[in-house]
Image (cartoon, rainbow, N blue to C red):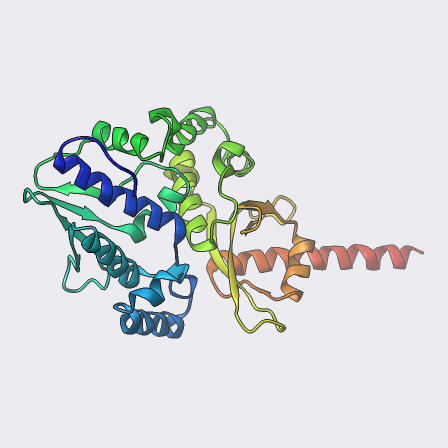
Length: 311
């Protein structure tokens, strides 16, 4: 833990913020819960509730959910002498987060799980905020994050790149705009190794901001499962595309954890991926993509048959 400067309150906030950022850099949301079916979600939640106080065990895991993340964060802060508790803000809400009580009585709401993708991509923070009086404004938080080494200056936030691209592409058609977003190093740079659950949320947030509501009518983003026969543990990815309603212009992208970005994939390659274990499941966007793949296949078979008949 670095030595921090400032008032006692500021030092306390910086310690809590430092742990918040470092924890978010190391963890990701468990895809079995985020992408999984009802059974997978139930099993993951049951396991998390069983393990929530086995802090050594959950500290060693990379993939957690709100339950285990909030208990781990509270435990670390309490060890540092900062009062932190796990709370459920709504009686009907299963989501857990944290409440920090500073020594002077002021309170901070902190939600590591919702902040994971934001911190891993260096976006502005949205879920570390004071309760009641506004004793941490944007500028104060930014200065603290500079001291902690999260950013170099206020122009180092990824939000700056997102807003710049939003302005550049405001008059582009949705298909062209999406291509430029996904090929932009400013958008995917620094994401290598980001787990699919966090990348999914990051790209959804960025694309929604850049394209805006008016250009998202035919936009699809959905999870896919990769089932390998050799390895018993299934993996996940996700797909993004603009529905042009014509297989000739459909251009799906699939997320690569290794590359930390979305890779374009033509419909023929999609068929190969499905044979290798990619399952598109039954989301509406996936069903349409399968239909376009079949449309192209039928067209190619018909053309081949016509060539044979001509001979």
